[in-house]
Length: 537
Image 1: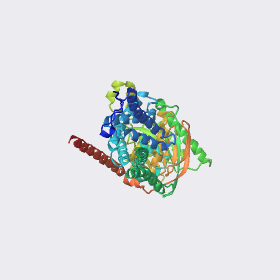
Image 2: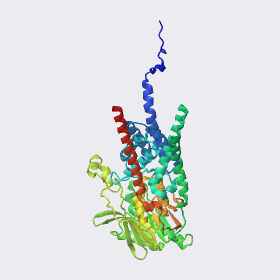
Image 3: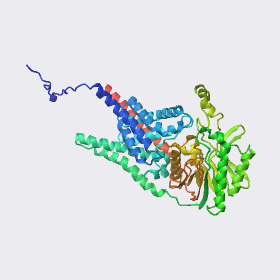
Image 4: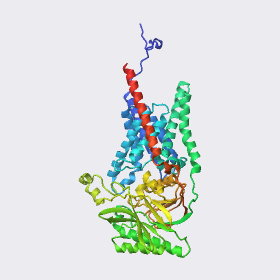
């Protein structure tokens, strides 16, 4: 008698045997999602400046949604971490330009932990109806956490900061960086769901219309919302105009040792200001109402050093206009990164002390531990800077100018409160010489463009070594310098006093999205508990 392998009848309720999965197939099944997660993180990085490929963020999140959907928490943690590394390692490579790969790798590894935890949350809510909404809110909740901890947070890499050239940009004026980022991520996850449902329909021959409608809305609503918000973005003057001069004096050389050339840096900025003054006197350039110098343009304390005082005072008198000078000042035993308002007739009349100082750059957390690991790191920051406590708004020739010094531009609150304190335009004085010709300066410039739209203010970016720029309230860069050249920008810019919805709402959109994320996670956990209980019955 001959027995064949097909003698089992499926109609009897017994499923036919399936061949055991080979080791190679198992390995491939694990490697494909892992590779996809890492590569989609790289794709997200490529969407960021200096490239203008903002739209690549959408397929990046579509792939992330695909690899995380339905995963258990362990797999989601690993896949989320790979996505985070793929994104943050290349994005933050500038942090190791002068200090070596150790700090760069440590920062990326720590920040990627936040992305890994977000991956767990996305996987949990991926089983819920309308999951792209919940998942996008979870991502923004992760960004909110990264912007606050550890060491007062590190918001670099917010999705909004990669969208300065994108169609979603007007949403910054509606709900700030949280709303802008949420729209991008939601659209990406919506694309993922559309593809998934289309593939499912081909397999089963049936389309779940309700789920398909929700997926389509996830893509359409952010785009339609951004188009509807375009009328909120304007570069029209409301309080007249001002002629502003942005000075880029340059530095003797790039790198950390530019600090050893402090007097040269001060002289360079004074010289460029005096050169501009000569052009004004010759009628070649309009006379500025005020002048903006960058952060660290005078690392010699002019209050303690008469020669530095004399150099700045001479430059102010030459141009015949007040100057905002970036100085390093020691006062009452405290080291301060300070903007000094210098009047050509009265000298220094006002100051602003930087409030959001940079960990491991301007102060060292865990100093004793770091000293035990590598004395060179602690020697670079011999004395910690102290924090200021008040918003910086200078009145320059009757114009109220809000100040967000360098690193502060990455923090929502540090820019917003200058506008709520009456700023008619914003200045972001910066010093990027430490980071050579890396992408850092372009990433930071994009942040300033987002802030311009978010608060509907002209934003100037004076930088020691470039790129300095003038940005209109609609996010358009009208003038910019090169890198590591001495240059100046003079332009008549619009002044505005009205507040955008984003300015008025402040932190509320972010709180709302965090609550949405919490609600989705709570629903997912409750559904999981009910499912386990039902299985035990």
